[in-house]
Image (cartoon, rainbow, N blue to C red; front, side, top):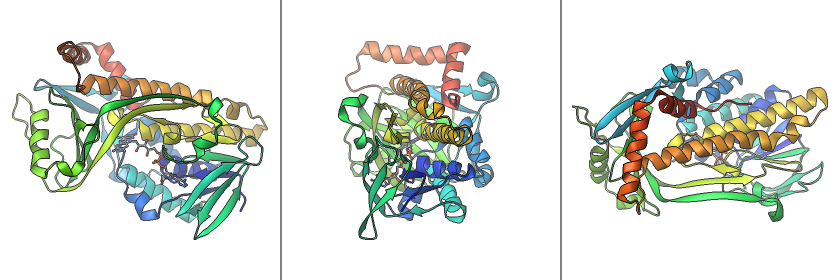
Length: 391
Ligand SMILES: Cc1cc2nc3c(=O)[nH]c(=O)nc-3n(C[C@H](O)[C@H](O)[C@H](O)COP(=O)(O)OP(=O)(O)OC[C@H]3O[C@@H](n4cnc5c(N)ncnc54)[C@H](O)[C@@H]3O)c2cc1C
């Protein structure tokens, strides 16, 4: 099997890349280790930055998002029973975000790819990238019980944090920057209308809580829990009681409860692998970097990477110049590090660490007070949340 771009992974990065390349007249093959249903139902991100919304629309993948997505113009911060709304358009010159689940983005892109695009093979597990330092790399993969080879001009590793693509970069060239946090998020999906019309980020001495939503009838809520917590060790009523405590306000706001349909624990990690390119192999999305979910940046960074790659390859096709491909790693990493910084700031402002001292607690409260009191601090948060521009 032969193609121009071999894409490993059909998460948001791989699927969107296949779509962008198709629109640019460049052929690709996508290999995905899981089956279609698994990919379409894996609960993850839910916030699309303005730039991501614009990219999906321009790619012809925004029709259902525009119909069913929920445009949001702000978030609410809560601490010490206080509430403070951050108004994105007023602080950023009109930018906002869209609540539209990653599952739905993937469903839309899969449907488009199967209808109009190149091959998308499910249950096709990449085993290794070979010849990454040559002009004819290949991906060895297993599909329908047979081992096969996909020969390419370029390989893009969109296979997430646990994928195989990154392993093809020689250890002596890899630099890893990493931080793990001593807490994670216990996330639930519940069949109940959201108790607030915008996301609520709450800092409480007992831990962080987040109220978000997937649709007008489905709530998505999170609790900070110690790293390694087993989701099943929390009973449903216990989760609602704890959410109520951490989200409490001084006014008459109330948290609506409903049946919990799913619960899971997500670890919190910051991670960057440099460089994001080795020869003919390019890394994109979670394969190259991870952010803690507090800043809602992971999916959006993946989108930024594949837009950068697709533009660079189109430029090479049009002009014969590899200049933008050569700049890929540096271009992506500038944006990645801005998102790492923002996600770290949001995480450390809102999550009391298990070993936090009274001094640390006061600093967190002071950072929140600063956002509420200073338009410059508030605008910095709004700019980061609505997204850093694509170069
Ligand atoms: C609970 C949670 C909440 C989150 N919330 C947000 C949010 O609000 N906003 C946000 O922007 N981000 C959020 N994120 C992060 C976001 O979901 C990820 O950053 C995003 O999925 C990255 O997309 P990706 O395509 O790079 O990787 P992935 O989505 O991980 O996709 C990688 C794909 O590669 C496949 N694969 C792996 N190995 C192989 C192999 N060997 N061969 C073939 N296929 C392979 C996998 O099955 C998978 O389908 C959240 C993450 C979690 C876990």
